[in-house]
Length: 295
Image (tube, rainbow, N blue to C red; front, top):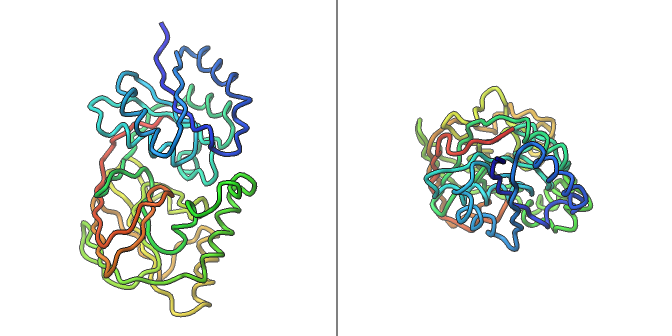
């Protein structure tokens, strides 16, 4: 008897080329002993609805799409008392989760094979006042780039679309006064950027130190970038970040279960690269080992 497998597919993800290989991927899954039921998303938030409604009845959920689709699907699992193990075939642009766990990107057949041969690993989920996030919640410099970058540019340019968007955002770069309460204390100051994350990679080109991060350790990484004194300091910092070097007096990295951010005025946030609205204060909490990712 075959093992039930629910598959959530975002038909708009990536360049759409996966459709040609989809029948072969489905045959691979069937030959490996899975009985696949496919669900195609129709709008933003639909993956959450599908996961909540149907995933509680199956042992495995396989998501085909970008980081946003995966985040929506996992958010839909959180209310369930019994959650399936989750596989991921990344067909997107930034693919931060794929970078973090070492999945093949934009290759549906390799992704299916990786799922078939993979094993489950615990993964923490993040919770905020209005819901959940999968790998990063962020404010400030460049955080609007992901959802503000046109879909057509993402399809044609891939990761370069994000970098071009970041360059365009330089003219609006500003710091904001923030007070952050976390497990070990309080940080207060003016910052260009801040985030809570459970990932080695953020925005497709910012890499955090792998040796300090456990994806199922019950902790999120609190990252803050201080206000810079001049353009030269900013250029030097950007160069270091793009070369995957975060050793700077302007960058603060802490590990924490919880954090509360308080701003002087409402600040725009993104959750897993999607627009999350503006908040004068917002609280985050780690949901330890909430999900098992198969890879």
